[in-house]
Length: 344
Ligand code: FA5
Image 1 (spheres, rainbow, N blue to C red):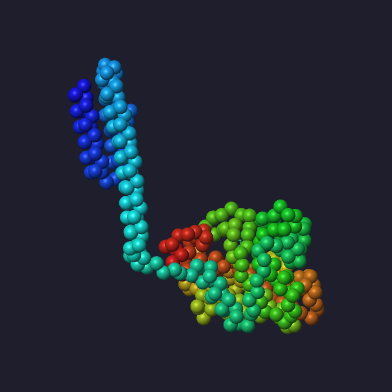
Image 2 (image 1 turned 120 degrees about the horizontal axis):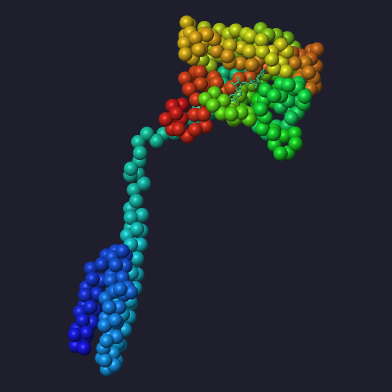
């Protein structure tokens, strides 16, 4: 019995010493398992007690229970101390947190390419006397098609793969020509307007096509407007955008139901005279859809086609930028690739 008593005393001393030397919660948990766990040292003594006499059990039992309770209580106190210490260390660290430390170099932001493009385009058109206007992206069949001389059964609707909304007659605009109608309904001629904005087409995405992209739209209505005006405006715009004074344009027939005649405007390649990879060795680049505003469109905006004429042209912003900056994939515009975005 004396042996067991000694063992209990030694166990208590060893426990007290180990506890005093512990400085982490992990080590504390180790001590708890070693002494109070199911396979621990105190449990082992309890097993030993089974073989003791009744008299021995009466003396040793309470001793072991006291040891167990003392260990549990000491562990709890130590745990609280350690937690308080850690908390105060964390607070101390926070207090001395250096907000200027470890600043990664070169974290300056940059304009998104769209912001950069819109600014360039608007500056060019403002300098030519145009006013900047805006229109909604969520549109109605009327503004996107009907008023633009594209009635419900018109085959030209097939050219625009449309995102229709579940609300009948509503859609995501497929082009910024909607702004022509909205503007001419509220602003009376003479007018010269320019608009940029997001457009949507339900198309498969590839390096040159996105389901969401941006267009620019130019509209001028006055009493004496001719094809010469649209050509001069388009050429000046492209010369300024590509910063190339000797850039020339050519015209090919093109079909858009809201202009008559309609045509496509190509620009001479801003990068070569003999043919290069940008112009696919043709020396010309397709850039604008254009034409004289169809009399039906003027009429749908209560503008007298006998008195007024207009021209309009439209283009894809990404296409212009891809040529100017040699961008090979349109999907980069909406990516979060910093190596691309920080260039602008
Ligand atoms: C139109 O959308 C006409 N509204 C342009 C117009 C305006 C003609 C005024 C006459 C007068 P088109 O469908 O060709 O035309 O689109 C114009 C440009 O938008 C294209 O040349 C292309 O650069 C861009 N675009 C069209 N679809 C996509 C697409 N899925 N992804 C990226 N760009 C596109």
